[in-house]
Image (cartoon, rainbow, N blue to C red; front, side, top):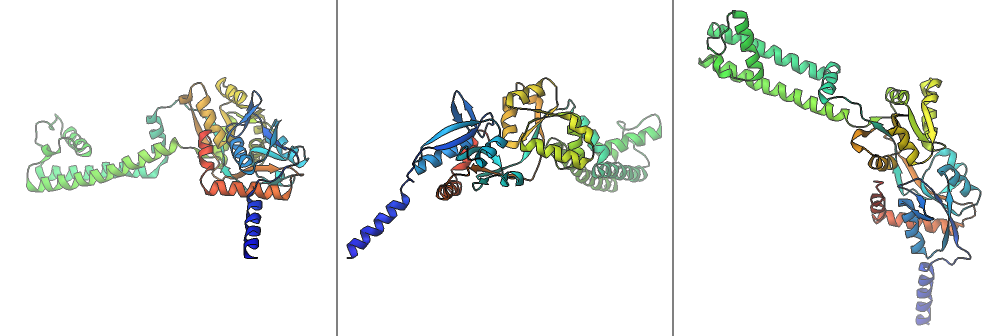
Length: 367
């Protein structure tokens, strides 16, 4: 009796773990020309999302056929219409799409970004611009000049002037000015006085000069570094400047929709004319290289890939991005069974928990 029960339990376990039987192959829609997520070349699908799907299908023992889909929006619509059982790409889960179709659990999140032509300016110009705008830098310079001027005055009073031949000038005012500049620069300051009182003042002023200089250098380096980092696209002025320079974007995508919504919030309908809608990486990069526009907008993973594809990568940079991220997933076809939906979700959850999805994304340059 116990042996029969044990065999029954074992058989039930084997049945649960066995691949799901299929009456016919699944129809898998793959968005073309949407690398690094998905693409079709010479009839063969590829990309990080495609590799993830292939791993799930192999795990489940599912057979499938591939259907090429032109855009992410058409993929979601095809799933909603039951034309495909699963739509595969990095499909952003947004409210309008959720009204049409069901989605799997997300397997990654991504933001939007701009790839832009680098402005031709020297780092010194960047520093000067920051100097004019940053109170900390201005205060540091004022402190340095003021404290060293005070120190020079005290040293002048103690020594009844600067007597060293390397400091002395034909006019006393010039002598004082030269001593002040030497103290501010920390060059040759041992020549400014030999008495114990003078040496004490020189030491104190020099320590203070080093502290103030460190503040100046640290702040300046941080600001120059920040200037090279992507701006926040949610900031209205950053977005307005980018739009005025022209933006190319894939037509009918979340990127285009987001841009047009932002223009509405900016209250400047004329900016609509600064958006150039097209399709595909080649068209977007071509518009950027030919200076039709100065910016290209897409998902961050795609922008990172395009930044490596462009003919002169050093002439371009990722200039701005949205720091809020949108979940991305597969879209379920309306006729896909609940059991198969659950199995896809379980596979995605397991692969993500085990750290298997991240290497897929990195292989395709999407992470």
